Image (cartoon, rainbow, N blue to C red; front, side, top):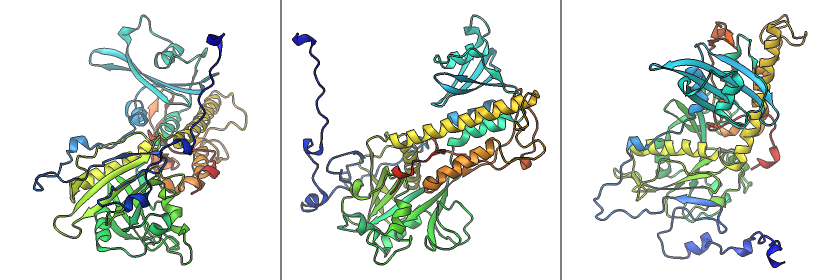
Length: 492
């Protein structure tokens, strides 16, 4: 009988079950130097870069950041269709799977070297599958269902339907590249000595020479009024988000910084909601420390901020400026490169600039894999794939004269209606942007149109509607648009 008894799982741990980390006030009561980052008392974050002791002898060179070790994360899957299918002979298909949902499949025959291959892409609501398979490995030439099963065994359908719409490739590449972003925004928080609360750091009004020097290192100071570049959610018309900011371009990516001291200061508002509204809606932020006071990541109350890069200056405004760096992120954010050197100390210069910006962008991509953002991307992808499926079906039916009066060809027909995939795509972005506009994930990108057997139609790009591509990414990134926003879980 004892062997057949069910053992109940142990009860979930509560805060009382953990041995808490020391509080920041306990640490400040000890002898310095203090760490750049202190974990919250009950955890929830990981830290990289805890050694900041200079090498002995002091003259020893600081570790250099080899360019080969500094690599920006990219979503190569999002670019495969544009690179390998558009403008080349290929076939597109669509169907509905009871378990997998809407499916859109692309197939191309190609010769690599002297061998024949099939290049296959299958889009599901979960992910995109891609493979290149030598035909010599197959006992017979497969049909479309069999091809789809070669890249995803879970496919369980009787048939795929051919896409007959001439502009299909334009729709498909827009879906594939919705995760790509070339625009980013990051918060910059100025933490003075002894400041241990959100109210204190957001209440700073003055910029020290060391902080000004660091901001100049990040980018150029720009006037917001009539600014034409990526604005990162800042007001460039009425001046409601301050008069100036810091902006830069890094490897063809536009970056706007939300600098705490440059955002509007409101007398009598201890929370400084005007400042927190922007920085609290960023995903990654820099914390600049002029003196040795630990930063605790849960100091800033935000559902968005998932990673911080903490930078502490030494020998500011001299010819020998160095920066100590530590990184922290929430537990469900995977590690992101480039890896900090040991000790994590950098000389001010182009190598550190390359390292820092690569770390920031990779941090945002990694954050998109955290549970909250991953669920958001899944909903976004599912909604866009359903819209793509419907557009391919309606327009393919219309090409064969099978559609009703309402099934007009996109951008065609008498009324030149405002429907179609691109309008639906814009609505999804517009809906999401109400609560995620400040995430720096939208990216205006023009798309050219290819020729294919699902659309051997040459289209003038100038006549194409402007369609945003998204990334965060990204967007892998991951990702980045969605149709139904759960606003209540994203408040700061």
